[in-house]
Image 1 (tube, rainbow, N blue to C red):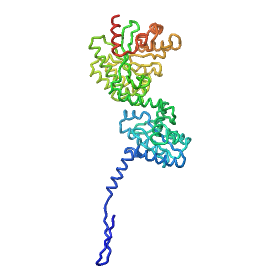
Image 2: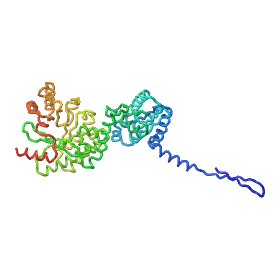
Image 3: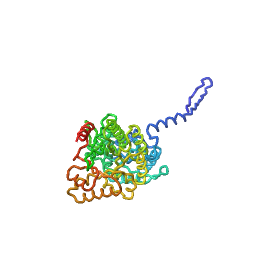
Image 4: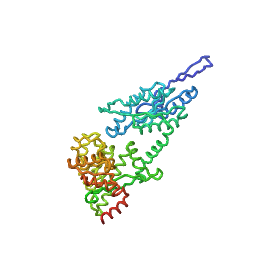
Length: 464
């Protein structure tokens, strides 16, 4: 309301004119703009812009009053699996519930920010390290409690990184970076844990972050390539198949080994798209060999847990076979024993779907994952792959020899083949031959080779 005063000189009177404006709509729009600018639309929590403002204010207060504050970087473990299995709607519901639980864990003077995706930042004011530890333990326990989302009971854990002001940084960017670094350290320690920032974390964690970022563009940049390691019939010494192994050609990162980048791909979910690329490229190469008139041999491709449990995995395998024209019986999918025994009842259905396509399935690293014989006899598996940790010392370690012999006898009793990996000496080969192993793979006959080297090796093999 605005009021104007008007004087009438003739009558010596004063008049007041009031004008009313309804600004409800304008104020609503202003509030909505403010909400969108400073709050997360899904959870209603402060966003990163409001976090920056509050943290800068908190730093000024802490500096003036000589107190400490804490920045907690929280990342939900394996959240992507919820989206992949139940859909993004369930994922959103889960994030809303997590945000509410986190708000209940802190004081009114503190801030819970949804930083993005499944990441949350907590700003705790005027707090000491002992209290931070207690708070971190409470937060982990709170996140870990069961959720009921769309009639599904879920369990979720979190990894927490902690940076303290002023010890670990005196500005927004430094504190955020160091809390993030500490969070990666917590993940590497097994998840569902918290870790304070330590300067020595920077090297390994920064390397991991750089590798992860580069890996996201590795396919597009044509940096990934396939190596092939022959699998040899132990009696005839003929080629029975090849195992396809992934390699990464990145000079900037000094060509990261699979032991380094595969776990990162698994943890981030990149393994799904990378695994699909490996499978398709393997089948394309197999088709080229068939078209060139080579004697058919099996192409063994490793399948990750995330890839296998993707709801479209069976249909992807089917479409890839149809697209390339490779006969299904020439494709062998290698699953680790731990993947197979994770949910054996559910896995039997998926494996039966693949088996009906004509695809072969083998259990990799057999003997390391505590298989149940009750399930093993029901799985449509054609081959058990003896882990190299047992093969390595079969000449000198009687226990390893007994384990390998037991696996071979078990496989024969179940009508399955055996292949031993990591065979490097004639003594190992002789032991495996005398005890009835079917196939061997290892440096004794050939290392993993790039395509051109493998084809040259194969030409020599065929001329023997």
